[in-house]
Length: 75
Image (cartoon, rainbow, N blue to C red; front, side, top):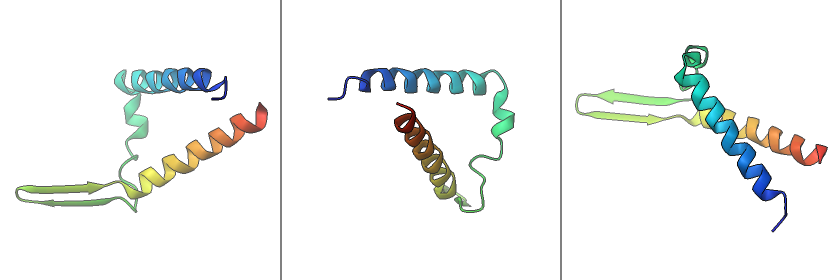
């Protein structure tokens, strides 16, 4: 296993904690559009709800891929 994997996992965890704290302390209003993108599927009927955030997850995948590419490029 690569020796920097532990460091990357710790940094990713700290990033998630920082994002969670940001949203918890009121910054979530800035991300109100997230989960409501045009490609997100939302079906609501009496007694049934279905939500598939396809476009949102695609956006997260692209952003994380770019971040990982930059990390590998810089190290």
